Image (cartoon, rainbow, N blue to C red; front, side):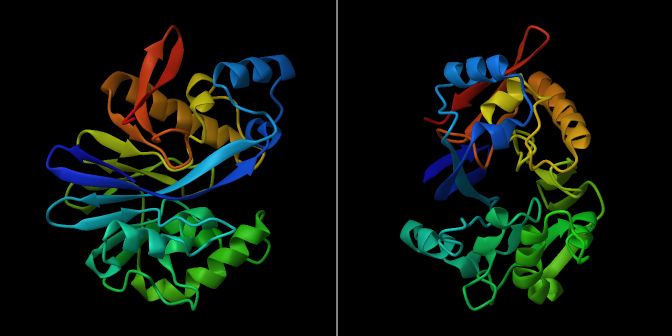
Length: 266
């Protein structure tokens, strides 16, 4: 667990677990020589890319906000014991924000019996994201099944967003569609942004046009990514990711005609 301050806010990264995938899945139809060079430079194994899975707790003083209550396929409900070990009472969380409807970003928000883990919290998601997972002919049927099983029973706890909006004072939704139709980043005060899966790897910062095979709308995710990187390269905001190696935090800095990733927080 990594704790840090953002102005008057107190934040904690909660390490929930990890899973693995291949470079082919993460970077799709990238030329082999270019991909090999990027992987070597970042010291990444092309057959075994490790995705960290994290939740982010933000205490603003007025609200206790949990962003992306994470879980893994092997341990979907591991967030509860992680919170217990960190001395965090789930009942103290009043706001749960889910960046999008892939299960590794919401599994920890429910218990194994289907009850909500955060009994005093309002849950937030983009309306377009919620509606995307309801039809039976969804292009990602496994994710849709998990969504309907875990989150539909909690529907009365959800507030659905339509675009950019302040969720609680100082915390704002930032639509970044493409990885899923209603994917959103989360602005945290004036100093940081949580990016969810619009950025999946440090290589995405250098190569924003490299979409994953599971980015069902690749042109849209590339457009969202480029717009966000342009902003971050100018603002110098702290960037908080879900799946990056190391601490998961860093900054996007201008490098020639593009950008590069500078990790922070250890």
